[in-house]
Amino acid sequence: MSLPRRAVFVAGRGAVTTFGAGAGALSDAVWAGRSGVLPRRRTARCAAPTAVAAEVPDACLPSAPESDRPLLLARRAALEALDEAREPDRAAIGLVLASTKADLSGIVGPGQGWGCPARLARRLAGELGLHGVAGVVSTACASGLVALSLAARRIARGEDERLLVVGVDALSEFILAGFGSLHALDPGPCRPFDVARRGISLGEASGALLLTARAGESIGVTLAGHGGANDACSAILPDDGGEGLALAARRALAAAGLAPHEVDVVHAHGTATLANDRSEALGLAALFGGRTPPVFGTKAQTGHTLGAAGVIETVLAIEALRRREAPANAGLDEPGVDARLDLVRERRTLPRARCALKVAGGFGGIQAAVVLAT
Amino acid sequence: MTRDPAILAVGALDAGGVAGTSGVRGEWAALGIEAPGDARAFRALFRRTDRALRRLDRASRALVVAAEAAGMGALLPRDARDETALVVETARGSLESDLRFARSLAPGPPHGAIFPFTLPSASLGEVAIRHRLRGPAVCLSVDAESAGEALREAARLLEDGDARFAVAGCVEVGEPRVGLPGALRAVVALVAPSRAGLAAVLPWRCGPQAFDELAAFAARGERAGSGAP
Image (cartoon, rainbow over all chains, first blue to last red; front, side, top):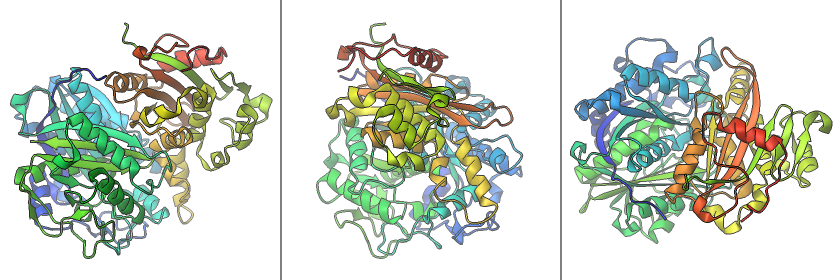
């Protein structure tokens, strides 16, 4: 039996992506149908079986060693979220960080980064003058949503008043070659849910969401529920029927006190691998018992930004509620997944925009979902 | 603290050997097997085979063997596995696999079999697969070994009703690096809410050295008793 819990509100948003600095720049580009998956420049010399990636423009970050890139990305997004929240007392805010590999400088060279996000979290909290680190999540591509769950749980329980959730990952040869070694990369721009999809396009980004227990600080959105599950069938591939994803989403909706038919829009994980998109479509169809609400994904535009993905895509799910409109699925010509998935082909008005479901999955069979409500 | 969860079982593994409340107890030297064991060690210790073990990295093998030593398979009811959470903390993350993968980049095509293990959540997945655990799963990156964060997060999940049982663990595997001593250790505890009325094998631990204390308990070789649900 669950104990009564406090509501969790969103107070601030921030993002640094291939579209530049700013959650607004990200949203505007996504709704305009632009793609930031472009010929590789910064990582052009990295050996990988793809010509493209979604790199953050150099102009967004001060000149610094490569090892500081995750910190600089994270800091910029965090500052934007704090700014939107009108700079609450930072000494009373804790940090929850999500990252898959953080700083790899000690792994690939003489640096001090050992691919462990805890060190990055400590540095970021120190630079921002935050109260401290409340948690550091490294749960592969589901890290962002799992971090939001962890933070929401702590606030709901009364352990924290405000938590800044930051997701970040930077592109490197290690990452590009890694996904290349799994034959998971599309040589060109990825096409999530398309019949001709060939794999993912990688990206780098940071995203930040300031969560608060105080309704007066809200931008009009609550993190109404969250849930998690494990496929328990493969450490790499999702389960065939999307059962783990459906289970996580069902748990998030139950926590929010909502039924599936009350979901107005879904932001999908949509990595563009054959297995993920097929499994995700089946899982969502099972969750909704047939035709789904409008579904959109944005990795054809932002690239798959790994530990940042869950946070920046939650920013976009919130934006869909605020604009009362779902953006089109970029790169989608001919759907190649279960037809019950209502994939948005052109920007679509949401007659009722009160509830958005965001889902994600990652290596280790991890599935996560959050429910946003206005 | 009547709301403290109950620890139902513990398994632990280090460079010397493996022990747990399943009653298993073995030293690698005596077994003639290098830690953290392989498929042959698994068969010798647990009287059954796990052929997939040989393709795992050492962190995953360590976590899988520690979970087995705890005796989770016998203790966890089948109908509870969909609602059993899995929370693991690590200070080193996947350092060993990271270094192996980085080394594989230099001479030629990178090694696809290594890369999945450069994500620390892969080891959680291997435990989840073997015990069909389908509850929420979290991998926490921590500053120091034995931080106990995984136990605290598991307790939150249980108290909030988001899981009926929780498997909380830590895993540290890595060769010595600057500022990091070499390590080989995994500790796994099966935890349930106190309201479930199950007998604990030892009092709730979630202090700063919680996993050290759990490992010491496992090493004493006490078996799980009437705590079995």
